[in-house]
Structures are given as structure tokens and as C-alpha cells.
Amino acid sequence: MYAYNKDRKHAVTEQATISLNRLLLGHQRFISGRPEKKTYSISELESLSEKQAPIAGIVCCSDSRVGPEIIFDQPLGTNFSSRVPGNVASDSAKWMLDIAINEFHVPLVMVVGHTGCLAVGQLPDGDRGGAGGALIRSTQSDLSSQELNPS
Ligand SMILES: [Zn+2]
Image 1 (spheres, rainbow, N blue to C red):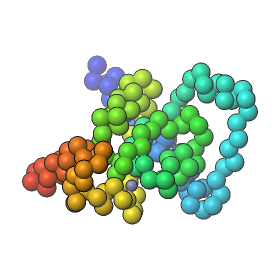
Image 2 (cartoon, protein in one colour):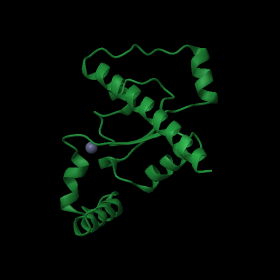
Image 3 (tube, rainbow, N blue to C red):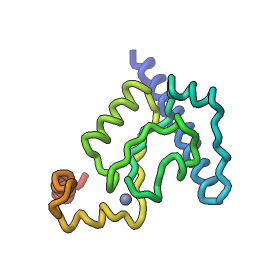
């Protein structure tokens, strides 16, 4: 039984490395200004509407400058993602990861942060009375507990 789990862990780790390398190579194409041209035939779109096989679950900020398919230069159907201001672990982001892992068996989970994040910049101000108040309070609480209990 141990050998089976060890082999499975090795296979999953190998798949995660392959997925990570694919995303990193895509990011290199993106930052070099040489992304792959992406157009889809009707049959490809019909196929995508019927099934998907993502290689990663990605939590990414809602910021208009960091769309994961674009910054990782990946075609439709590659990333199963949730975009949340500040890329925080909202309930919907956690649900997305649950689906990505348990339904699509993605080998890789990635949280994508970025510089100049407006949402992260708002955290020190606390709840400003908007729709994100509860999530801001929850995130501040999580951060405070991490500061008190560094691991
Ligand atoms: Zn952001």
C-alpha cells in the first residue's frame, strides 16, 4: 500500500511539474511579446463546450491586467480559475479549487498575486462599507492570526 501511494505521489508531482512548466513557458512567451496565436474553429469550440481538461486550478486577482489565460498564454480549457479581488481565499475561490481538484484532478494549484494590487492596498483601511466588507474583515482576521502564529 505504501508503495502505491508513493508511486501515485510521484506521478502527481511529475504532472504538477509538467503543468507548472507549461504555464511558466507561456508566461515567458507573454512577457517577451511573442504569445501563440489563438483562434478556434467551430469544431474546437463545440468540443470545448462539451468537455474540458484543465491542467491547473488558479486563484487570481480580478485586476484587469492579470487575466490568467493571457499572462500564461494558454488556450481555453487549460486553466480552471477563480478571480477574486486581492486573490483571497473567498468561499467561491475555495469551491472552484474543490471542483478543480476533485472533479478535474488538476495536479497543480496556483495563487497568482501581482504588484500594484488595489484590493491588497485596501486591506489596511478595513471595511469601507462596500460589498467586500465581510471578506475584507475575514482577510484581516486571517492575517492577524498569521502574524500572531507564524509557522
Ligand atoms: Zn490585485
